[in-house]
Length: 131
Length: 326
Image (tube, rainbow over all chains, first blue to last red; front, side):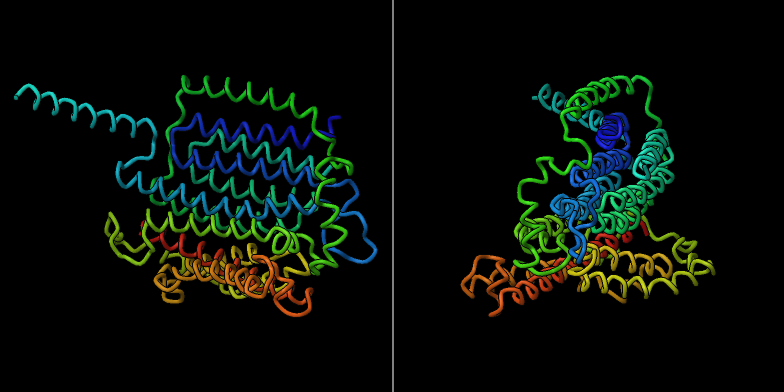
C-alpha cells in the first residue's frame, strides 16, 4: 500500500506546496515559481500513471515485449514546452508590472492602486462640489 | 527504491524553496528540482520526457527566471505570519481530500490499470506497421496525435506573441534605465577564464547534439521539442559568455522573429499538402505512394517545424528579456 501509492502522495504534497506558495507569497515571481512546482507535480502524476511494472521505455526493439504507456509521455512532453512558454509570458507580465509600479509585491501594488483611486475620488468630489 | 529516494529529495528541495526569501537561491533550487524530476522520469521509463524536462527545467526556464530577477530584484518580502494561516488551512484541507481520493487510484505500475486499456495497446502493437518509427512516443506525438501537437505548437507561438507584445522583440534600444556605465556584468563573464574555456568547448557539441536529437527522434528519444530547447540553450550559453550583442549579430532578432511563424506554417503546410493529395489534414500516408514512406516524410517535416518554432521562440523570448535588463 505504502509503495503502491507513494508516488501519488508525493505528487499531492508537491501540488499543495505549489498552491501554498501561490497563495502565501506576495512576490509575483515567487508565485510563478509556485505555479511551476504545481505544474511539475501534475507531470509526475501523469508519468507515474503511465509506468508499467517490469516495463521499459516505449521504443520498439527485438526481444522486448513490455513497455510503459507512451500516451502520458506524449502529453507531458508537449506540456513541458508549452509550460515554459507560458512561464515566460507570466514573467513578462511581472516585468511590465515592475516597470509601471517599481515593485512586484502584491501588497504594495494594491496600496498604490488604492491610493490612486482615493485621489481620483477626491478629484471627482471636488469637481462635483464646484458645480 | 531509487524512485522513492528521488521523490524524498524533491520534497526537501520544495521545502527549501517555500522557506527562501532570497529568490536567486530559490530559482537555482528550482533548477535542481527540475534535474531531480528529470531523473524520476528516467526511472519511470519516460526517456523523452526526461530529456525535455532536463533541457527546459534546468536550462531554459532557469535562464528566464534569472533574466526576470535581474529586472525586478532578487529579494522578496517574508510572508507576514497573519498571511500564512489561511493558505495553510486551504492547502491542508485540499491535500486531505486528495489523499483520500488517492486511495482509489490504481496501484503504481499495475499493468491492468484503466489508463493502459484504452488506446495504448493499439499504439504499442500497431504503430510499427501503421506509422513506422521504433520510438512509439514519436509515432503518437507526430502522427496519431498530430492535431494535438499542432495545437501545442500553436500555444507556444501564441505565448511568444504575448511576450513580444509585452516586452518588444528585443530589437529596440529604449529601456527604462540607461545601460550601466561600469560595463554590464555580462561583459565581465568573458574574462572568467574557466567559464569561457568550458563554454568554448561545450557550445558547438551542444548545437550538434540538438541537430542529432532533431533527426534521430524517430529511432531514439528525441524530436523537435527537445531539439528546439537544446539548441536554444546552446545559444543562451553563447550569449551569457560573449554578451547579448554578438549573439544578436549571429541571430538578428528582427529576422529571428519570423521563424516561429515559419515553423508553424511548415507544420500546417504538411497538413494542407496531405489534404490536396486526397487525405485528411495531417494524414501523412497519402504524401507519397508508399504509406510508410509518407509517414516518415511527414514526421520528419513536422518535427522540423516544431524544432524551428520552439528554438526560435525560446531565443526570441531570451532576447526580449535581456534587452530589458541591460
